[in-house]
Amino acid sequence: MRLVYAALLIVAFLSGCASTGDWSSDMPTKSGSKVSRATRVNLKNQSVSKVYAPSDNLWLRIRDGFQMEPMNSPLEIEQVRWLSARPDYVHRSMARSSRYLFYIVQEVNARNMPTEIALLPFVESAFVTNAKSSAKAVGLWQFMPATGKDFQLTQNVFRDERRDVLQSTDAALDYLQRLNNQFGSWELALAAYNWGAGNVAKAQKRNLAAGLPTDYENLTMPRETRMYVPKLMAYRAIVLDPSAYGIVLPELENHPYFVAVDVGSDIDVALAIKLAEIPEEEFHSLNPSFNKPVILSNANQQILLPFGHAEIFQANLKNYTKPLSTWTAVKVSKTEGVDQAAKTLGVDADALRQVNSIPKGMRIKAGSTVIIPKTGTRSGDVSSAMADNASLSLEKPSPPAPKCPKPAKGSKNAKAVKCAPAKSNNGAQTASSKGNSSSKNAASQHKSASTGLAKSAKNGSSSSSGSNTSTKGASKNP
Image (cartoon, rainbow, N blue to C red):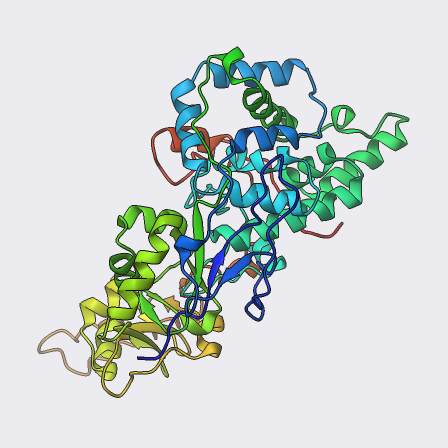
């Protein structure tokens, strides 16, 4: 069996707050990878157990990296009081962060950014990886479809990289650095991340015209944006001195929670979970970007696994002799209903509908990509072109032609009643797979889910209440 996993990433530099430097590696990085700074371990001749890291307290390291000045404003005090009155909620979100915070801190440190930025997902999503706002912003960093597209986060049938821990973190930090360079302060950069760079620039112009200061505190902005930085600074205050607010922070060791494995052949999600010997929920918490039951080798994807289970996965994979993937993908050549398409493809109609999330009564449009079980004639991996560009478009069928009334029985010379032709269904409602409608979502407006997610995260839900309507991360046109 050919080697199906080329390399193992220790996803982060390992440096404690008192360390003399980051780990480095002579291992080449995977072509096109956005995590080129990560240390790599070759599965052929290295073992995960040989890799270890300092176990210093990560919270100490975060505190040492704070650079922003506390606002000490009534809004910040209000937010601190709100959080301190809800210690269970704070503890749950802090516990969730334990999977991701080391990696985010490493990336923030590598860019010489304030470590307050590493706390931003507390505000955005409460560290719920599959969080989704009413404005369709998703993931830890709450990227809107158009914003994700601007930062080259793939959104297609197979995956949504707005939910990918590595890719979305990289994109969010790129975006925040861009905004900081544009506006010259982290407070304004954060306001622009929430409200949109164009809106912040317009607010500054209005203040300039009125002879007013153009800093964060003096700009006129929506309430959500006005509260955005105070919320972040409230988390900063709690991390800095949790006992002052009756909060107990969970222990976080200063080493990677997960490692990343490069995919060398298509593999079923269910099989990856089995080989790693981890709960399904744990796998999906680390790998929330996968939309389908198969992970594609030609999509330059990685699987994140808990640090202690990567070697278990490695050993089980070497001993596994059966096919790694039972799913493939094909392009539909003509528009037709699910039953007819299933007959054409030689698969079960119900299975086709279920795995592709096709509602009953919808037709599959020509050119769409669907997932189907592998057969002897379709045994290879999904191609790179399909892995990167797959889309699924659906439409409602045209309404049936109206029945013409028959002439009255026995009537002579009865004229045939003309029936109006059925209207064409050019405007039929269509539905596309995740990410394919990003260009139609106009507005490049990146709505914040920070307020609504407080309730959903508290209840373990993945979607925001959508109570706030101000926009976030608007079109990236500085």
